[in-house]
Structure formats: structure tokens, C-alpha cells
Image (cartoon, rainbow, N blue to C red; front, side, top):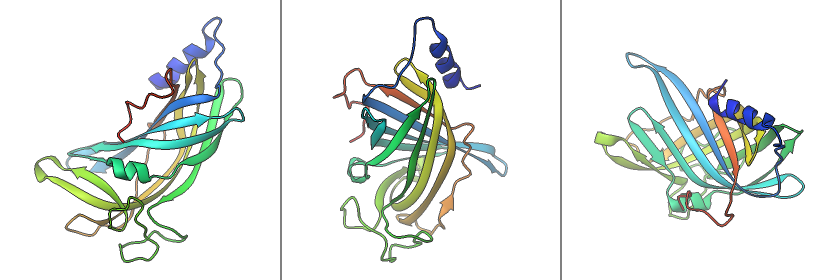
Amino acid sequence: MSPLLLLSLLAAVEPGLSPTLEPGTYRLDVNVVVMASVPVLGEQRTVTSTTSIIELDASGMATATACKVVTAGPGFKSRLPPPSLRALPTSRFAIVTDGTTIRADMGAGRLAYDGDGPMPQSADDPRVTDPDGDGKPGLRMLLDLGPLGQWTLQIISRGHTKLEGQLTADGAVGRLTSVISEEQVLSGLPVSLPSRGEPIDPSRSSFSLRRLAKPSDRSFCAW
């Protein structure tokens, strides 16, 4: 049992405590864990952490605005800079609760390209857009490879995430029951890479939802 889930269960049974998910402003942190086996190095762990502001209304509908996206792994770290974060679309989805359990399907989405079918493989594909307005196809991402230097990449992606957890005194914590993620680097690297669907480990991935004491507080965002 994960520490987050254990904590939530303890909170749920604390005498006199009856958690509910009330309308208001929340911080949502989603951590997606990728485990890959690399020759010689063994098992390697990469974590993508996305922080969003959630506005929850009385009907249980949530409006999510991402304000920080960071990926860290063996020998590298990447992040979306402020212009890219501001270009991310808001999403709207239902948060369903049944007393102690919370479930949410955050929906499927595409980033920096339009249309259906296979993901574009190059910036020349007419479906690729420029959501951050920097004059280059795709969305800008900053990649830090340590001694190998820093790179500015243009990417597109698509994904679909579902959450399930337990209510706590000020929100909820739990796991990701389903994660689909695929990314394509359009430019910025000296070699072309095929689009990749990461071997995501839902059992190690998690989320936390916490009501903000000060709804205007955005100090944890990277805008």
C-alpha cells in the first residue's frame, strides 16, 4: 500500500472527520512513473510531474489549467517554459465521489496538432500547429542533459489519464487507473526520433488533490 493511500485511509476513519469534496479551488499534482530496463544500467525510473489549478463547481465538474510540467530521469530533466504552459488548453471533466472514493476521467487530448489518425512524424505535417506562438511548429520544451548541454525542443503529444482514490480532509489522494501517453520530438535534437509511447507503470503513478486555503495563491506554478 502506498504511503499516500495509507494516509488518506487514516484520515477517512479519524473520529469526527467526514471528508467531502466541496466546490472551490484545488491544486492537482499528477505523477506519472515510467520504469524501463536499460542494458548494464538496469531498471531506470522517470517521473513526469504535472501541477494544475482545479476549479470545482457544485455539480462536480472540474476545470483544470496546467501550470507546471517537469520530467526528471537518469541524466536529464525537462520542463515546459511559461509561454508553453500558457498555451496549454484547459480541460473540463467530471469528478465523481461516492462517500469515500473519488474517480475522474480527465479525457483524451492532443497537444500542438489537430486531426485524427497517427501522430504527425515531422514539422512538415499540415496538422501540426504552433500553440505557443513562437513561430516554430509544435510546443517548446526545454531539455537539460547535464554535461551534454541544454536543448530547446519542439514537441507534440497526446494522452488520456484516469484517476481513482480516497477522499481526505482537504481533497483526495490515490492512483492512476489508466494512463496513455505518446510524444514526438519535431525538432531540436541532432537526430530524428520516432514517436514513443512510454511503458507507464500505473501502480507506481499517483495523484493528490488539495484544496487551497488561499484560492488566489499561485506561487507553486511556473508561469
